[in-house]
Image 1: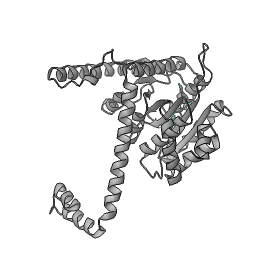
Image 2: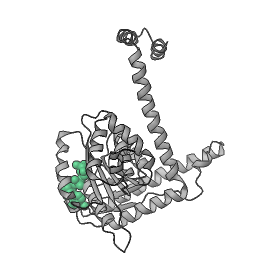
Image 3: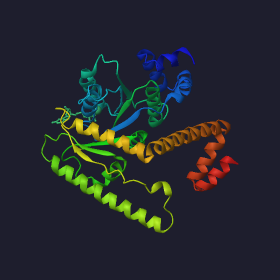
Image 4: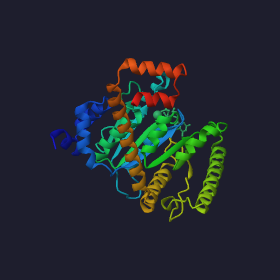
Length: 335
Ligand SMILES: Nc1nc2c(ncn2[C@@H]2O[C@H](COP(=O)(O)OP(=O)(O)OP(=O)(O)O)[C@@H](O)[C@H]2O)c(=O)[nH]1
Ligand SMILES: [Mg+2]
């Protein structure tokens, strides 16, 4: 093991920051270090925090980090890393500065590491780069890793899937009418938070979210029963213990209200994942997905380097002129 990975394992912040920059830039030496650190990963609790722009994700993350550092009721303190994915839009990109300012509460604390990642100019996929950065922080020994993303596109959902525990943040009145869009977000939520509970309509939003959860739950339950009767029920999908039912919590991030309950539920979810064996199965699934994604990229770029541009263009043209169907085009290309 070389000096840099030792330094990272020993919590040297400068080495850690440099390594993360190298990974963001997909530099070979940094990726090689990551390979060496990989066997040290798997201890951290990864918590995704996602939700619409401005719903209060950063404020919540800040409050949660503070509570992990200064727990009430004599619980042990935990080291915390925060990865904030910077929104692509230059309009919302400015919010980052505000995030940093609020993180001031934690400045100078060596048990906290905060990192913003730009989604602009991303070399690898955002999800896989984020996963690599999180692996470094995990290896470096941070016990809790909070990952903030704006919940819009597929890549944010992929990032949310990185986490053991996904918190979806809503604000009162936001998008009561975009239920279709919320269905996907609900699917990934382990905990729902109605933040800005000091504003009107928080109870209403909480009620709606609970109703939507009920509906989603009964749908899933029915299909599980049907599959079971058809003999399609896989053993590992039929839980030996009651399913986790995502709680819908209210918080006021600006005042720190409801944060203790939130952190408490997060730790209950962790216990649930451990007891049900899902912690391992989620991690396994994620690692296999990550490897398969890298494999696809590797095979594709290897294959592409073997095919003459001229041939590739010719077959693409044939496809667009409908001389070849997509399947025929592929057969031509791999022949
Ligand atoms: N009234 C009220 N305002 C809040 C609350 N939580 C956050 N805010 C405010 O809402 C604004 C957005 O908060 P952020 O924490 O930056 O929200 P965000 O979801 O991280 O925003 P983006 O990262 O830009 O998507 C800020 O002005 C906060 O001060 C709350 O509980 N009540
Ligand atoms: Mg934010």
